[in-house]
Every structure is written in structure tokens, then in C-alpha cells.
Image 1 (cartoon, one colour):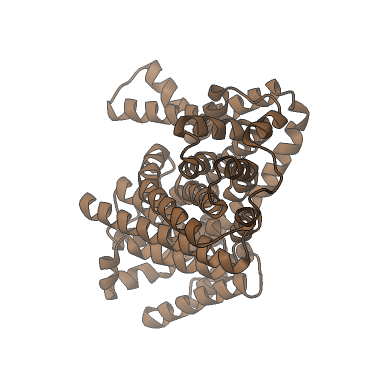
Image 2: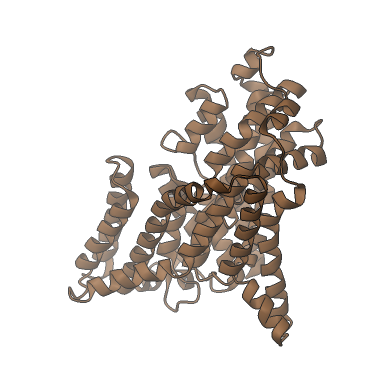
Amino acid sequence: MSGAALLIAFIILIVVMVVAISKFHIHPFLSIMGVSLLLAIIAGLPLTGIPGVLGAGFSGAFSSLGIVIILGAMIGYFLEKTGAALKMADVVVKTVGQKRPTLAILIMGWIVSIPVFCDSGFVILNPIRKAMVKKTRTSGVAMAVALSAGLYTSHVLIPPTPGPIAAANSLGLSNNLLLVIGVGVLISIPALIAGYFFAKSAGKKIKNTEDMEENAPGESYDELLKKFGKLPSAFEAFAPIVVPILLMAISSILSMAGASGWFTDLFKFLGTPIIALTVGLIISVVSLARAGKMKEFYKLSEETLKTVGPILFVTAAGGVLGRVITEAGIVTYITQNFTFLSKLGILFPFLLAAILKTAQGSSTVAITTTAGIMGLYSAEGGLMASLGLTTPFLAALTVMAIGAGAMTVSHANDSYYWVVTNFGGMKAEDGYKTQTLCTLVMGVVSAIFILLISLIAR
């Protein structure tokens, strides 16, 4: 099969995949792998060669990515257990000031979610949010939405969160993570601004249980921090995140300067994502030991592997689908017959990720699947090439476009939606007016900003 019939078959199979995941609750790994196999057969690939194509796509996605995701997730778990996440929150509150609690909780969420999953981050920081609401008499809804917005922004845009780091690898940016992090921070700005003003607006219109029970008992902000015990220093708290970024930055600067010698080789080694994150992990383990919690090291490591396992397999499945799409010639047909798609440019991955996110709920699945379909930015005749996204910077912007799409929108089929509404003391119907609408606004604002930058960068 080839041409229009193959394209129609591909579209039908994508719909089948989405329905299988969202309606029949078939695991994304099985759904994506099943669709990949069917597409390979329908496309007429040699039967004896199909296993090789599937294996190549799977192993290609796993190459170096698995270690990076595991290391990043472990750092997040240790930050949570040692109280470093709470210390970072405390530093933000003192820096921004308690007179601006909504802004403080927004920034707090944005920082904490760089290594920590947004769901876990909301649970970790929710007691602080509630204590700040009580102390400052700020709208509980505004604070819940702002915290959610801050967490969600870095969750979909900034490595080493699994989704963005998987997308960077799938697009061929595994050695340019600093670029992806930098662009992620840049794109975070309009998303955070949109989230902040939306939260302030929502707080004036909607009330949660905290707003209705102003005198409800609860721990104060200071009592909460004391109850947790001795927290690590600010340096210890931020070091597992900051040090790896600095190492990658130094490596990139030395490479661009054309430096050579043992000093350059040393920092190029330390600046590779795997080694840089290993250094961050070692720092976090030292903090765990200083907190007297090394007996929990094995348990935390095991929990990390259980958490990232499904993500790794879904990411690899996305790589398989991307490889089959390329081998089947679908990209070549689209390039030759649908030139209007090239005009969509960077909006194409945004729209694809948004469709997948809205349909099946998981941002990580939407990111990894879309990135797998897009393929390497350096591949001749690939989808990235057909859209004109063939430079490292445009590829990094594509990661952001995928992340922005995977933000649009969070509703009832998304576990994060229920975390925010339940812990935020809101009714389910209010969740649509806050969490769902806020993620729509943030996603669209981010997409517009990304589009403008892509037009300038060409």
C-alpha cells in the first residue's frame, strides 16, 4: 500500500490508538506497539524485516535516554525525602516576599517541578500553600491554580523532567540538553505570566473550601516547616539541580570556544547529560545521608524504577512508531503532496500533542508519542525536514511546541486534574473553570510565543 490509501490508513490507526488508550484503557505501550505493527504490515514492509524495524526503533529510543530519565527521577525523589523541596519553597517565599503569595507559590511550583513530577510536587507543596492562604488571607483558589500552573509549566517544558528529556532525545538533542533547558526557561516566562494572571482572576470568581471556611484550623507556615524537622541548607537543596546545569553549560561554552586539552576533556566528560545528572544524584545522596535517611535509599531507588518504567517503555514505543512511519514512506508522501503542511511549521507538533493530550490525558504519553512521530531533526526526508525544523535551535523549539501541546488541556481524564481539584479543595465542575481553562490559556499563549520565535529564527 502507498500514497493516499496509506495516509488514510495511518490516520485511522492513530484514531484507533487514541481510542484504545482513552476509551478501553489499554496501556499506551501496548496500544502504540500494536498500531506500529499493524501500520508496518499494512504499508507492505517485508514481513521478515518488520521485527528488525521495530527493534531498531525501540533500541534507538532507549539509547542513553533510559539512564538520564532514571537519574533525573531519582534526584527528584531524594529532594522530596530530604526536605530539599520544602527548603527551596522556603527560599522562594523569603525572596519573593509573603506579601506576594500567589507569585511566590507560582515560582515555587516552577522550581520544584523541574526534577519532581507535578502530581507529587502539588502534594508536597499543598500544605505550604494552605498555610500561606491562612496566614495571608489570599484566595485559596488563586493559590491552588498558581501552584498548579507553576508545576505544570516546568513539567512539560524543562528537562530533566521525563517528558521533555525524552522529546529532546527523540529529536536528536541528547547532547544539547543545555540548549533545551535554556529554551524551556525562556518559553516558561509567557506561560507563567498567563498562569499568574489567570489564577488571580479565577480567585475573584470561584471559592474553594478554604475560602468558605476562613477560620478553619490548620498549621501555620512556620509550624509546618518546624514540624518537618531540620531542613538542608539552601545550597544543599538547590545543588542537585544547579550543579548539573552548570556542568553542561561549561561543557557547551568550551566546545563553542574550540578549546582543547585535558581541562576541556574533563569538563566535556562531566558536562554530558548522564555524568552531569550522576553528579547531581551523588549530591542528593549526600544530603540523604546527612539527613540520616540512608536506610531508605534502597526503597526510594525501587520506587523510582517503578515510576519511570512505564515512561521508558512508552517512550521506546513512540520511537518504534516513528521508525515505522519513516520506513513506510508516509513522510515522503506528505512532503511531496501536502506542501501546505510545511506552512504549519512548528504548529504541527503542537496540534498533534494537544490532540493526544486531550484525548488520553497523560502529558508524558502525548510528549513521547509526538516526539517519536516527529523523528530526528537531522534526518533527511523526515517529518522535521518537511516542516523546515532542521537546526538545533528550531528542534529545541519543537520540543517546546510539543510540551505546550501536551499542556493543552488538563481535564477529567488526567490524574493531575484530580490532584489539583481534590487537594485544592475545589468541586469537579470548578476544576473545568480553573485547571482546564488555565491549561488551555497557558498552552495557547506558549504556542503563540513559540511560533513568533520560530519565525524570527528562520
